[in-house]
Structure formats: structure tokens, C-alpha cells
Image (cartoon, rainbow, N blue to C red; front, side, top):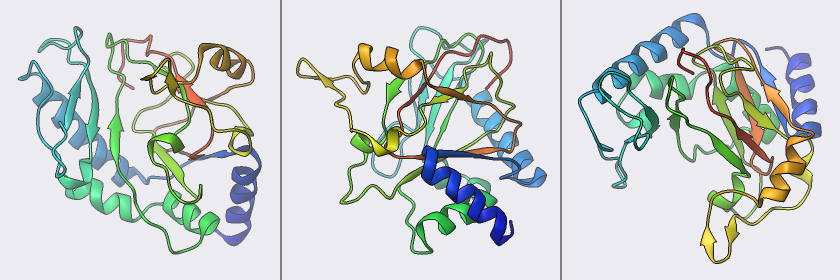
Amino acid sequence: MNEKQLKKYSSEFNRQGFVMLEDALNKHQLAAMQKQLDMWIDDSRKHKNNFGKTIDGRPRFDLEPDSHSSINPALRRISSPIEISDDYLSITRDNKALDLVAHIFGPNIKLVNTKVNLKLPGSGTMVKYHQDFPFEPHSNDDLVTTLYFLDDVTLENGPLEVVPGTHKKEIYSLWHKGVFTGAVEEKVEQIAQKSAIKCIGKAGSACLMHTRVLHGSLPNKTDKPR
């Protein structure tokens, strides 16, 4: 991207709290990530429970309870894929979205974590509205979540929904009646959904989202993976 494009995308990010970027991954990067992901999904068919282990001891491969089977795999998350894939690691270090992140926040940036979130057909996976910041508190909120689309994201397959401008408003509690739910109160979600924007795009696109932006997503209602 040239300087003019970087400034345009940076301005939109600062104003809305998120920005969509087409062709964040080139065709070779996209193909490599898709191929590796297909291998992980196929491997999950052999398992009935969460499996694998990350460097810090968490299950690496998370399966949707009551939905996963060898015939219809419902792998919903892969934690820290860069620990077990050279392709994911190298692409994380070199892509157009990273260039934009460096332009927005400056060159001294740090990677916090990586994961793959999936919505395979029939899995029923949905994400209640929340903000990322309560999950990763820092001394400041100069944090961005970058989501790379490995498949085309449409209105039907559970796209990310973001609420513009909420990065400049309050940080909502994800605790309710003494229980950590990972989601905002239902009444907050209902109000947020009225002004939410669905982030759709072609495979290879990316969405850069400020850590304080309210967001969520509905299940994939199609017969294709997302």
C-alpha cells in the first residue's frame, strides 16, 4: 500500500474503530493457510474431545460439544497455530494488514496471541457480543484484533458484526451475578445490534478491529465452512 492508502485506512480505523482491508493475504499465502486448515479439520475427525496442547498447557484444538463427529467435524478453534505451522508463522510476520497496523500504532508493536476461529456447517457456533479488552487488559488500549478471512464471508455464514464508534465509549462488564460470561448484558447487546455493521468480504480480506469495539456473530447457516 502507498502512503495515501495507509492514511485513508488509518483514518477510518480511528474514526469507526475498525476497517476492512481487501487482499490482505496474497493468493499464495491464502492457499497455504487453507491447505493447512483442511489438514487440521481432517485430523479432528479422529477425536471425540478437545485435543493437543499449547506451550502454556491449554487444549490446542477445541471441538463444539455435542456437535462434533467424524462424519461432520465441528472444530471451532485452534489456539496458537503459529506454534505448529511454519506457514502460519511466516504469514503472520509478513502481510498487508500488518503493514497497516504498524502505520496506525507505530513500528514498535507486539504480537499477543493467534488463533483460528471456525464455523463449520452444522456446528451452531455463535459469539455473543463482547469487547476484547477485558480478556487482555493492558496499561493502554493501543491494541487491535486482526481477523483474516480464509473463506468468503457472507451475510448467511455468520459474519462478524461490529458496532462503529464503541471504541471511544465505555468498557462493559462481562461479569453478571458473580459469574464471568464473556459477554455483555443482553440489553446492551440488543441495543448494539441495531447499529451493528456486518463485515463481509472475499477470502484473503482482513478486518482490523480496535480492542474496545463491541462485536459478536451469529451461527453459519450454510452448508459450507466459514
